[in-house]
Picture 1 (cartoon, helix red, strand yellow):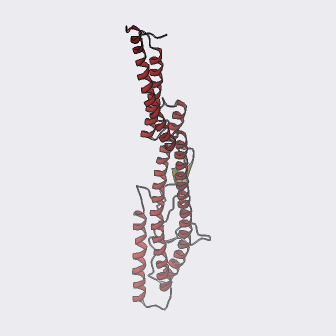
Picture 2 (picture 1 turned 120 degrees about the vertical axis):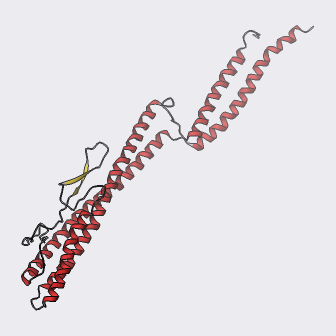
Picture 3 (picture 1 turned 60 degrees about the horizontal axis):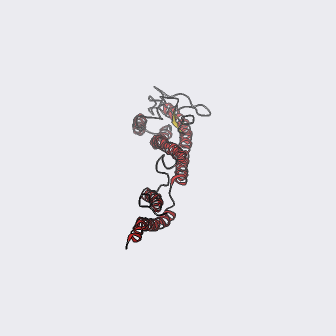
Length: 285
């Protein structure tokens, strides 16, 4: 039946054209954003998962910032500790030379002057061995803890060393060494003092090198965990991409197809709208 009141063909053609236009808008949106799930309207469940994982990845940025800070603290401490170790090597050398009973008074005074200058340098090195307010060479805390995950359930500890000289004259070396035995009052003014300073410097040097090994191991662990967190973030990002990224090659091909459908739909609607015109031919005399 042909009717001028109700054009069923035009209605169907219009519905199909509207559907095609909707598809075209979807494809263009994916091409513009590069995402097949750009918001909750596209796919609520996938969008929720993706947002949670984006939040997790962002939280790991904070963890990595803390680990970078920890590594910087360890690097500064290692540099200072190595300088202190070098100072103790020189102090031991001076003490060994001054322990020779045959040297002259002027030579002993020269050795002592160098020894005292080196001894007093240690406090300055320790005081300056800090980064962002943290100093792990002055023994002022049990340890420093840094976040290892986003929930705070895991931490990595950095040991706190105490490389300060003891107050006054040093203590007798122990075996194995468990402290810095050289004191702020040690000197080389006599053979006896030089011998004591020599032994204390040697024991202290062994202790310092052992402590630096512990700090180096902690720094290596921090570096390794930081690398792991970086790889974990890459994996999370890849997982998010698998969920929400659009296949651009597929979408480009789909765009071409939908554009053809749109053109054909427009022509079909035009033809359907012309159908009522055929009724006029029935009334021509």
